[in-house]
Length: 405
Image 1 (cartoon, rainbow, N blue to C red):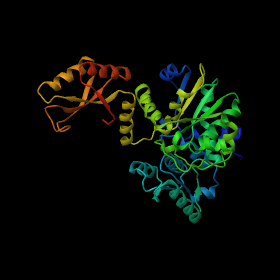
Image 2: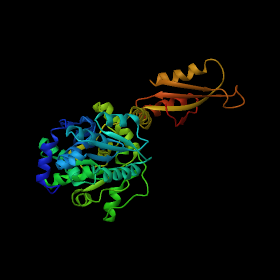
Image 3: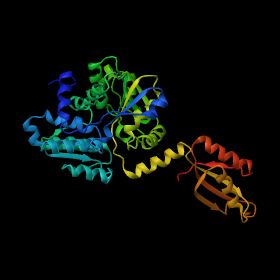
Image 4: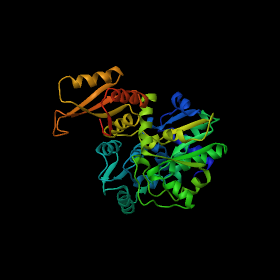
């Protein structure tokens, strides 16, 4: 069957129900109020494998011949696609081999193994792992399942659009993350087939905007490098097979800086109690740039697989960016009672001191001054400025210091 047709999408939509959880739209009061639109979230981070990738992987495996299924499948991935293929193969009683870079976090390796896949660790980066996967596919006759540049995979990913439109028939705008373009190709193509008036806007990290560059050139181009915390969309070259569908069906591309993703993570945790990985947050961060008002907007949250160390770092940075946590340096005379006095000024303004660093060696004349670095919890920018003002009024000459907690 030709892929990315209405018939194929309908078949795929029924097929993926066998392995996907129902991810009903979540209305967001917070983002609706913030943007002046009616914002809904499509929480694919709640899938069993933690991401939408299982849709494309499962539909792709369902299109294989019996002989291909017996030989098994292979892919290269360090993230969500690895788990999607592993789980799809397990459901179809197929052998799955996943080539992962040697730098892949152990938790992701173990999750992939837990779905029954054989994991081969090779190379330092995805490109090297991918090359090895192609070698193994040729050697053993495995079917290679590409993470994004495969029409069958893109068709499976596009089933998200079917679910969105069934639940919200009058949707005006769908925001979709773009890495290599498989998800965007599937979602935008099906959305336009069902209702050409729906605007589908792709969202890329500023440090890996390969699709925006390709659309500008009118052909697939390769970026010289990528630099983004949205590792799931850190792609240098978009898919050539799915590129024509992007050209035809994507209405616009929004790019998002890493700092915006960090703040978006905090917003999702505090307002929706959801863990969404950086790539999945692209469509949330893009809401602020959306040139629309009074529209029904759906942000696809593509995944939620984030390790706890990364999560901890993102939370800290988010609090700092929002001025919920800040560090200030003041100089004090080295005599009893000075620490209590400066703490009193902060307490009077409802600032919460969470860390103190006392440096008696900031100058050779300790009687003249010692440095006190105070990390303070505040309600936000306005509250921070008020605390800083009161310190100034009391003669402290405070200086903001950029530091982690």
